Image (cartoon, rainbow, N blue to C red):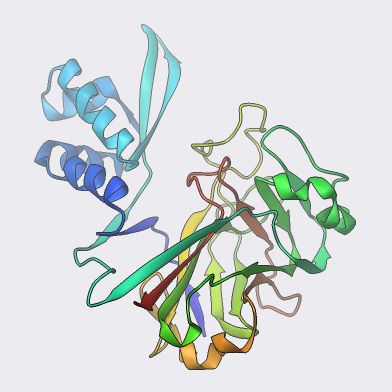
Length: 315
């Protein structure tokens, strides 16, 4: 089954992420700040324009803009203006969902592991255009699949390819596989277009222990603004950020960002059949939309994480 992303940018928060949930909830608690977000749905505006539109002192508008920015709901950048520099504001997030029940309850605990994007165990069928960069420089040769086995790949902060796949292997540690209640993986990703193109679709698949959960149809390769974490040397004309996507498998089915994806369940993953959990992500050369993939690490894009595995298990 495939899930097509709509044109919105969505964040999903839970009680287990208080450091992210609380700033967002606080920012949205003010009707004035909600009105600002509504204005930015139409076009980008600077602080003075927001102040005029809402009949606010500029200092009050600037304070509210700062709270929205710190919560990650809007993006701002300083641009030269007629009377000096001005802060231009644009919408960053279109929808927010909050799970107000903690995931660690009724005797269930959670394990979280963050694996760097360069720590894959195998790279199969990698095809150009492809490449890897660290926080500071390019790795190996551009558009050479052999670069994906370069020793410096472990420092990768952004990698991309047109088709092929990468496999990541995670340990369950001391967890008895029979006690696993759910398992999920999250990563920041997008399509991979020449330079960037926000309407460039790509069919990105995810498989766990050899079972394909389904395909996410990435809507595009994002570059209309700089990624929040990108180093200064990275070109403005290249891919900048992706969308944070989360795949979860439980006893019933598989979900992508909380929406049913397929009927693959925990039983199908046979977690007790090996020494690790295999995650494979990529683009099939036979897919309808072979639009490549960008994978963002902790110091590129918008989200400070690599490939994150979370496991809920009975204590």
